[in-house]
Image (cartoon, rainbow, N blue to C red; front, side, top):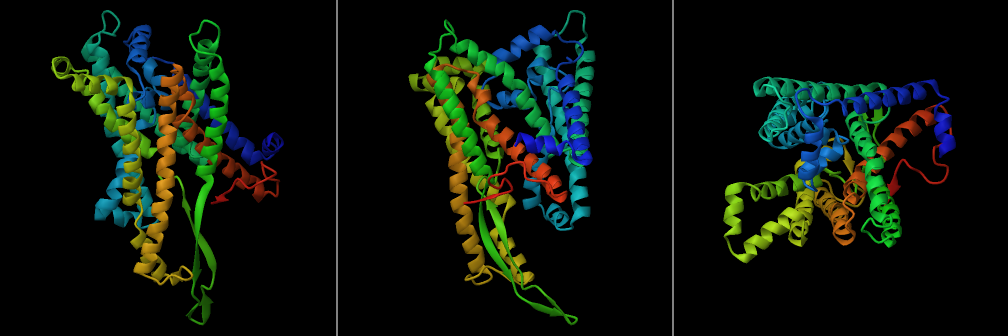
Length: 444
């Protein structure tokens, strides 16, 4: 594999793309350590380290490469862009105008992308205003700084930085390697690995409070999780499609055999993000003074439930897992309609061998989709819950960032990047990066 990577650098175009991507990473990491003007960096970092947990704030800090807890220029990262893209995907399934744009090909996609950019700006403004409000109310500003001036500077800086990262991600997609926004998220996650790994080593060392036997267990779980993520990410169920022959103006069209791949993990990390965002709401509510006093004077079961939600106990984990499974099915039902697939196949003269066109095809595809979603949902729930279970059992809080969701993102983006590099090499008749086994896909 390493020989193949070195060989990739001998191709001028691939080398140029890789160096461009690395340069973009350097810019991203530089902005992640430049604080927003007007705040006390040490107090802000101390406040957010105490406030961050395994909820949506923990994900935000993880995706931004610790830029959020530093309240740096890139504190929001590309999260507003991701949220805008998810919202637009949902709107395409319920609003006819956006659904029609989706069917218009390249021109329609350009218009949709324009709306995504507008949505990114609006969400960035709202999120920047919210986080600036928290910073100001907590008294984390430097002495002599006007709150009004801080609000203006902070909102403009964070919004402009998010727009710059969105632009940088598009440039990586166009001139670099991999999908730009995904590569930025992966770079942020990997940048935090050394710090989390150091925390784990300190905890496992003598006097660290954690038994050294957990070192062997963590290494074994890490290998198993990576292997499982690769298997699920590359896993696909292929449905064979055959096109009937047609005579058009004296020429014969069709008669070809192909297939449609249905991935096992179709929703990616989106169901996990949705579930974490919703569960953050009760976690936030129980910390409000009015509700906190009400819970303190309430029955024992209410106090136990409040404590469980705040520390990530078994009730929280059960709700978290069930919500991930629910959103896996919910998101798939929104972005994919088996009836549309059946109608398109019949329109273009395609059919599944042994299955009648129309409703029979739709029912057949839906059955396969349901089975794959069951496997994918259980896998996502296991991946998301694993860091909590290991943390509660071992006391290693850093495992939240070293395992589970972060590995799912890093491995998934890494596999896509290897595919792109291999595609460039195959075009020039070079050997695959991996000699044994195909990385371009796996049939389950």
